[in-house]
Amino acid sequence: MSEPLTSTTGDPGGPPALNPAGRAGRIRSLLHEERDAWRRHYKKYFKHAARALGLGFVGGFLYFLLWPAQEQKALELVIDALKDIRLEGSALVLALTLFYHNARASVLAVAAGTVPFLFLPILDPLVNGAVLGLLASVSKHNGLDVPRIILTQILPHGVFELTAVCYATSLGLYLSAGLGKKAAAAWKTRKARRPAAIAPGSGAAPAAPPEIPEGRLTRNVVRSFALVVLPLLLVAAFVEGFITPHLR
Picture 1 (cartoon, rainbow, N blue to C red):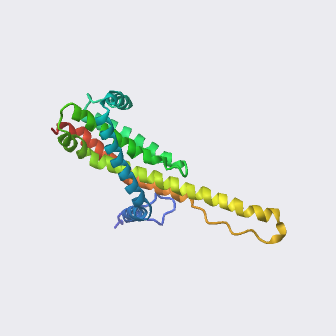
Picture 2 (picture 1 turned 90 degrees about the vertical axis):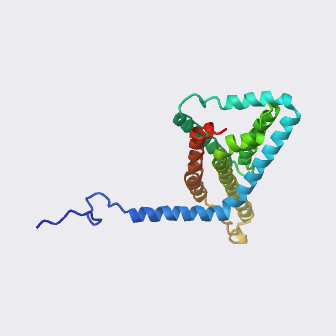
Picture 3 (picture 1 turned 60 degrees about the vertical axis):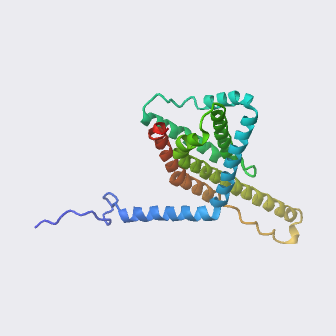
């Protein structure tokens, strides 16, 4: 009787055996790393991003409420920035366009973190909050029900989108802080070695302070962006494309 064919891992010439348990274990490991990174690094930066978002909203709303003459100019700038989003297409096209637009903006926010010390990514939630404040002020001046608009037109997708904005900002801030520490460590090392170079007979140079591993910084940011930011933006885009237009 012939034996049934089975996949084995011992055949060096055959294809690599599939190991669902191994893949599941890898996913669990990534999620564990993400949870650990959130607790150790991102959480404090996320709080700063959330505060910047709230500050931008309150500041934008009060500014345009008190100086309505600036509303039209600011609104034109926002419309021009969003001109690539076509509202007249299908819900699927709208959702995918929104996802692309928001993902691109989040990538730029994280990339701003490659500049050490300056913490430029904090500008992203600040600007997003100001834009929301502008829209609330415009609605108020047009006699619309602002709380209802926020509840029906912003919060359904905004819960996911604004969370993604703050998370992406926390990644950028983490990157900026990490690269800043690395630059500071390199400067201290160079400074510590300079006296030893001037006086070679004075003994060995002081040990260099440990540097932040740049590879780990990049790996953490890429993993977190793929596991958290992109899924949140995808859900937000589909909610905004398929559900938000039907809420009144």
